[in-house]
Image: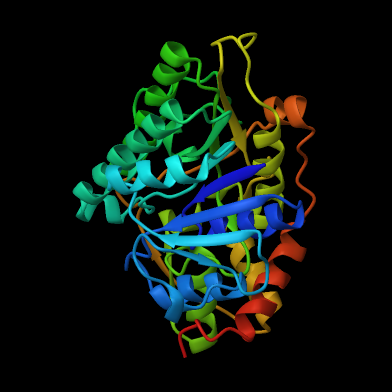
Length: 341
């Protein structure tokens, strides 16, 4: 079985590659290693998988030095010709598409990056899956598509017609495009609506790393909406186990929408942002300095996943408590060369 993982140098992609290799699968990873955040963190993740920075060049496969079943290729999904060549050469059985331009707030500043990466890139992946006999495409959607939904927990049956950020709109577009390809070409697709994912090797623009940096340096933490926010924080190992379980369960013509599936993937136990900060204070042994700000454009007050659909299909059940997850993250952070000194 051969699997393509896009976004392989990203946070969730990195963990997905490692988990799939533990399952014995043959993996090809692809990532454009853009500079949205520190590329050294991305190269560090790749190095953990046996791919050194010095060996990487665009559109050239590099075999891992620690696992012969893993190859990495630097490439951009908007390069349709290069992507088609990769699919033709490798003949993938499955594709796990995790590459995207992330970040709600940055989408207000640079919307064109989101259209290129999240829509053009996704369209190219769909076309390659269609023409190269891929058995199942699993792709990352987002809880942000629920917008200002005030019904909790969020269910896959809720209306998602009113996104409040460009990022969310691109993720909704992915779901619509996937449905079209499942309908027209019987391409099995599963969209996973990720809720807030955290853990070691996480992105520096997300709350856990920002909070840890601020607490360690004695600098203020920016707390939006006065801290009155609920987030369905989910530990990365639990997320990745769900991704793999979803990949193994291929949608059929028996689905409500044949060959097409959408599932929430989260912890189903949202916590107050202030409680998350207090847990980080405890793990770091240091009190945070707080600066209160109003709600930011594009943000939502609550995320809360109803994951009963994914659990019914795959048996998915997150196991990591917030206390254990934060302690693990801080343990990694304390020894990390990527923290801000």
